[in-house]
Image (cartoon, rainbow, N blue to C red; front, side, top):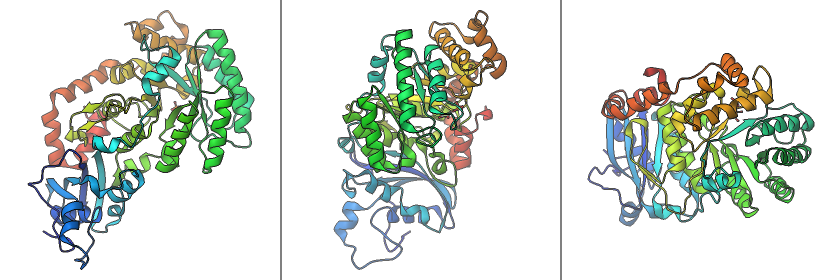
Length: 475
Ligand code: 3PG
């Protein structure tokens, strides 16, 4: 079956070490083979018709090759595509996106196109520095490199509206009552009711007071996200010159080039980067989309030191099985293919350090044990509502979060600790308690039922995939 005069399907092809491999779900108005041809053509060398300018060299050297199709319906299925290294401007991630995540989304014969994963060859990764500080660097700074206790953070709430004075007082209460990290919310930058500079000045002053009082190092993630690069850089200069250590970027809404430039600039100034992924789900959840794990890989290559990856137990979408994979992509250097969650195998080059994954969104002290069952200790547990929504306020909420984490790392659990801890008892009374066994059961189910899940996705297609990655009540 040809598209525009050429065929891109080559089942005999074995991807080379330096090829880029892509896994996607395709559904449309024609047989899956024809749809696959169209996608491969449009994302590489082809177009809708035969062209006089195509020659054998171009087609041989630069075309994409569909090397496997998992047909689910005559006109729907999963396709594996391979792109030769030299197809790309391999110093330029944006060019890569314009190819593989570009025009193909607009092809009108498609009713669904979901790019599940991309594997980036190690050779490509040489152009990136990866996280300069990453998981280990931040642990070292805070002093948890030996204990490996999860870090605990809060997002000051309400998201927007507090004055700088009010904001800094909330931050102080959170720090002195046990939290490591306080952050701006993704939609708070420099609004008139809370000017950025005044908020930073007041909050950093409180941070130093909290450090003196507790003897612990604290972090403030100041959101500098802006549509003006100069303003972001000026804010980062100010942070670095005035005792700050952590800068926050809404990396998804910034887009790759701006995020990359700002991450590099932050690192030049010796600042850690806390990356918020707000907006990712606009691409991640619909019929036409890009799975977050692809962005996560981009962000690790670009060098974020901390990144929101979802929780698996809170308010944001994502089943424990897929969130576990996101956690692996954050902290591991390799992973095997897991077709049933749309994940290709991955390898990070040695110099691309792990980043500190952030579990944020609908978290409270009653979910700490479950979070640890899913993420292990290498996680920043962040709670906004779960701290400031405590019946006795921010201070008690922070103490309850810290008590829950300390209980977990000492081998106990939240309900046991709550028997002797009023803050924790009140938190659980309000928010409830999620048994870690419910998470362990799901992870265990995954281990024992890989073949079943693979079969489910092969027969039910994207709906089978979604039942594993989105709706964990399935179990
Ligand atoms: C975030 O930045 O992840 C959210 O603001 C989390 O807020 P929440 O803890 O109240 O859900």
